[in-house]
Image (cartoon, rainbow over all chains, first blue to last red; front, side):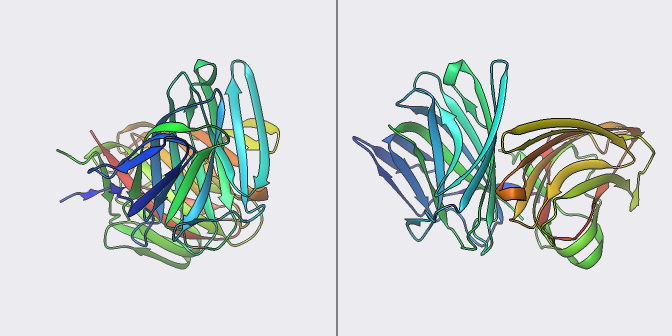
Length: 183
Length: 181
């Protein structure tokens, strides 16, 4: 019997904020969310898997909105100053730019208020008591098609069971699913 | 309903370093290795594969992670048969380079943080040239992007691959997944 390579991780709970927000866990383990200023998933990282993939489609309430992540343990985000370092490379028309910043969260994707945006986020070792690494390959609807790849690390040797996503301002709506890479 | 992505179990592994162990489901955990070969992971059942690896480098130097394709435990090291195109972003600098050698470059490891890469490999078991693409998160200076596209021009069927480093050693886990065709 072949061993399934990707396993859907059903959150043990979720939380969201924002005016008129809603969020719910579907029967298949995916999460629907609407008008969320923040969306937090708990209990999606476990000792069963080292590495994870998050797939999300979303639409933001604002144009060209940046999206951020914080890792989370037992229902609390880790916002240690300068603990997240993010490197991006962006392509917009004929322009290619890059930058690296450190802060209390990591900016890992863009979204837009007219076109749908999509995000694939890979997380390496978030449940391990070691620093965590992540990588994204999103598509943003900004200017109809905007490419921003990001790599980030979080230097705290802490075991995390979840994460929060949030736009810098406004809110976002969509659906996301967390998969564990079977090992 | 069929699973689209299948976790594959190597028939064997060999390594240079402290340890490399095949888990019950098929992934390989390794400790302080300078070389790690997975044998018998590519087969006629699948054309294309995803390799997922997280690693922690023993030094804070940014070391190149190399790969050679192998068959029956023997690496192919034909001169100039591997071409690696790199796209690198560090702070505000974006750079690219192409390297032709007897070995491929697929990632960078660095001891500043855990690193990880996703490596898609196209057709390694077919008796045709092989292609691959990696996306990475490198802990160098906090975070750096080193992405690679590569080809190997030998029309040979390979059942595995061998990972080596430009220096230091790595600890972590690697898993190979077949994409059902």
